[in-house]
Length: 288
Ligand code: C2E
Ligand code: MG
Ligand code: MG
Ligand code: MG
Image (cartoon, rainbow, N blue to C red; front, top):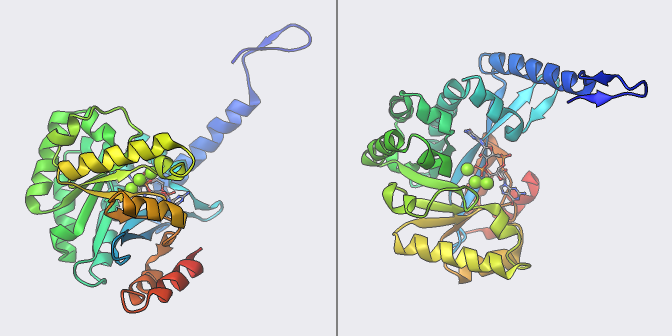
């Protein structure tokens, strides 16, 4: 951006901008070494059946433990990894790691894994999923792949074919962050989805904004009529939980039940199952 200083000369040079470019370059360089240096970890957030309050699975959430910067949040590095083509190998690692971890949990327990649209642009996605399932021996029905609306919008014919192949294996497909993208409702019947995840923004304002309740009701009704399950994201309060149960949402996720935790702490959630609800609470408090 051009700026005029006191002398009237126009400067095209913005030191803030060059610092940002340098920072971004160094983050890119670090990212290229992160996988080989074992700097990635998965954290797992419980997914709850709202009727029984049982944990029915976990969502795997990627964490980058940077040697100098500490924990880098996914929103600060995933888009970079997508741009420089690293999300494909990173995504393959996530799938392997998540499927092996899920094998350590009791049988029907599911694992949800986020997929980037860039992983669909790579022709090896289907094989990558097969390899993760084969090497872990995880039954395909226990794997849920989370896609976003952009996967349905871009290259939709190719992506549709890949999703059908995955469904044919028995893998579940969830539509993440629903309501925030630009896709048309007709995609909901075209794509082989098994679940809709209602974006956190609608849950957050549920008690404050009657419009949010109307939208949530409409999504729940639509999902139900299309034979899909529903997960509400970002449940933080009892009143949000009660509203969602009353409205017939099948599953929920959020800090009210538990934050994402490292793999070794997931057993704390499972220990509290059914017989001992307070243990779930205790695990959530440890994690918070
Ligand atoms: P997402 O898939 O929608 O995941 C939910 C995000 O909401 C997570 O953020 C989670 O920590 C956060 N969250 C859950 N419950 C609550 C709550 O009650 N309140 C609030 N305020 N937040 C809550 P996180 O872990 O920072 O991940 C952000 C996004 O990064 C994810 O959104 C997903 O789109 C992406 N992501 C994470 N892991 C992966 C991965 O392995 N691969 C890809 N491609 N994307 C990933
Ligand atoms: Mg997700
Ligand atoms: Mg989400
Ligand atoms: Mg979200």
